[in-house]
Amino acid sequence: MNTQNNIVITGFMGTGKTTVGEILARKLNRRFVDMDVEIEARAGFTIPQIFRRHGEDGFREMERRLIRELALRHGLVIATGGGALVADDMREVMGRHGLIICLNASKEEIRARLAQNRDRPLAADWESLLDARQSAYAQISHQIMTSGKTPTEIAAEIALLDDGALYVRTPDGGYPIIIGSGLLRTIGQDAEALGLARHVVVVTNETVAPLYGERLAAALPRADLIIVPDGEAHKTLDTVRQIYDEMLTRGADRATTLIALGGGVIGDTAGYVAATYMRGIPLVQIPTTLLSMVDSSVGGKVGVDLPQGKNLIGAFKQPRSVIIDTDVLETLPPLQWRCGMAEVIKHGLIGQPALLEPDLWQPEEAPRLVRQAVQVKIDVVEVDPYEVGIRAHLNLGHTFGHAIEKATQYGMPHGEAVAIGIVKAARLSRNLGFINDDLVARIQTIMWHIGLPTDIALDSHRWYAAMSTDKKWQAGKPRLILLRALGEATIVEGLRREDIMAVL
Picture (spheres, rainbow, N blue to C red):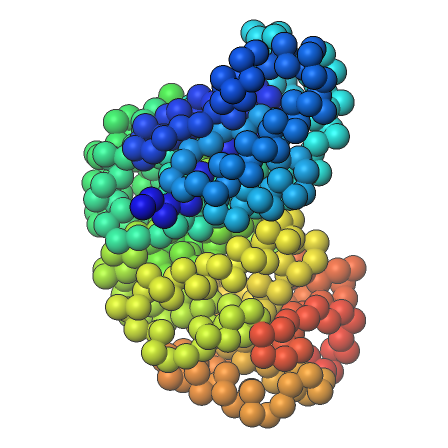
């Protein structure tokens, strides 16, 4: 007996549901059901004829009966009509044993596609119909924007979701996060499915290039490799300009995909290039450090530093996908593992206390550790994609930490600075009466256990001055992320200078 869940592809007319569904069914060796075709076969009439004979209400009743029938079956790939899952109860029925995917396209693309096929009963006033259905489509968890993707690439993206890839919803659709072992070894074989068969530019640094960059570029059909200096000191507009120049030399255009291969500095810098080169090109994040895997590669924040502060120039650029090969952690220096663990602990403190259990902190547990930590990031950025509210919770300890980096001219690694910042934020939270001494002591002990620092000999006035340039401060007033309780962060504004100075 086939117990696989159905894969249900829905969305507005003209988004490619049938074409993608057929490709996906062949790829997964499953039976494909086009609901409109099935209804026509059972009724003995075409859809336009059904509408003329029975009206839209009659057609919808046929659709509802078929939905209830298909929902009881397993292992199918189903393409629905555009209005089939608009009703809440029909989405609920189909979702009981099915993964529902909503395909999206811009109005311009839909208009062009419908112009090629005018034999649709509801196509005459399609724009009003789309507007009316948008709220129902938005209720579906998995959204895929089809713009700039071939049907084969869209089918591959859906197959990844069916295979357990994580997924991030964004205002414009969403993207998969693929986590596994050996992904870089097989990426050349999967290039078409991953959207990497056309021109690709791999941006990496001098450390990662000989380890993975050269092999990755060689494995892809049409890839150029751009190597920049390693380190936070090179996360600047000068490096961005260097990448622009090299991309122009290599003929990169708006159809080129940029791969950011490296840690957080590469992800932020190359991501900013992708957001701005020719007004934006596709971006794929391939993080190679624990810190970038669990934090900076997910969520779409990209940017570079100015002498006055960290990440003061930036943009929101959602990746097309994030590919996390946990095997690359085998070449990660112990210091970089510890730095990544600072972000893992932060995620545990603000949303998933299970991450604070030492049994999970071992390199052999990396796939499970990364998956759980990434899920915390997903849960936050889906609710607040542009950091106007709770997404700021992800900055626990970062205002303190960024100031340390600036004051030491980036002589201290980001993860170590964040670890100190988390402890400072915990102490301030205690001083304000939010948490008790026991939790502060536990956080400090965790940092010691991992091998992270919990304090630094830094002049407190200099430290405070560096904090005051942080972009999270508003109108010159302090704005910090603190702990209200274990698993619960909070934004606190207007703190007195003396309260902050007391923990520096």
